[in-house]
Length: 319
Image (cartoon, rainbow, N blue to C red; front, side):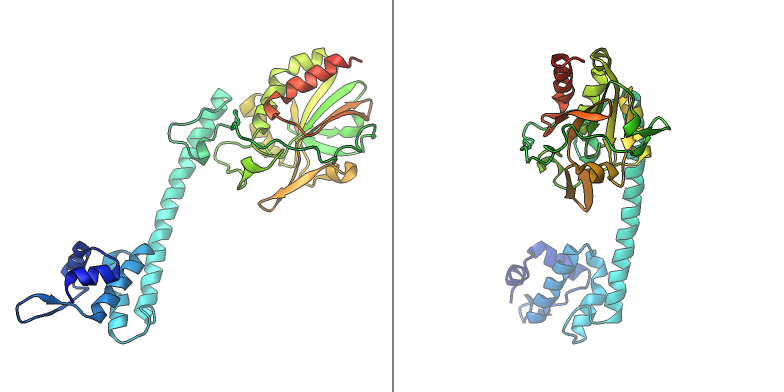
């Protein structure tokens, strides 16, 4: 067959076929007039080169696989040399991955330092998961519906529970003192260089918004105190060190409480959800007065405006 027919059947270009010949991977016969004459063997070899190339194996490294076919084996990777070719390709990819990972780590470190200095992030021109603007929210976030999972909480006494705070102290929830305390419970806070769970923005009531919510309580912190609130806390199942970075980066004037075992959820039957192998709190806020849950905000939407909602309720319901 002619070169055009070979290229069509193998799914490559005639230019690619000529290149394979120049490397000695294909050795067609010659007709009496000097034209190349390709056979079924050449089609099989060319197809194998194309398949191996799609796996990331360079053309010049396909020779052991082609020799295996030429030797009469049914599959190009039936020979020990072919297996060695796979290993070499894997090692080369591993080196490239390590190099790219090292570069990623350096870039993340630069991003974290810059974000820490400014206290906020701005969307980068080229986007990407490392450049998510956690201080703003997409316009199409799903609105959560009230499933009644928090209806039982009103009037419930706060249980005895000690949680580690980002201020370096242990906070007892049943010993918050007289007056009102605001505890806003959230799933997790994103930060530069740490990927959010897959499909995060599509989960009603859990999607991106924890950072805007925290910033809202930060910006209204003095207003909340003026509305007779004795203290404000954020609470999630994230570890204290992770939360402390968020407190420092966002310059939060209040502590975050860490509940990795979700003990509060167990004691109060709080709503949670699962994603990417994680069990997380649903977004919910408790107004605690003299050790009893006086008011519950659930569901919460939009998170970025929630501090305003809490402040409005406090002003409408003074002590």
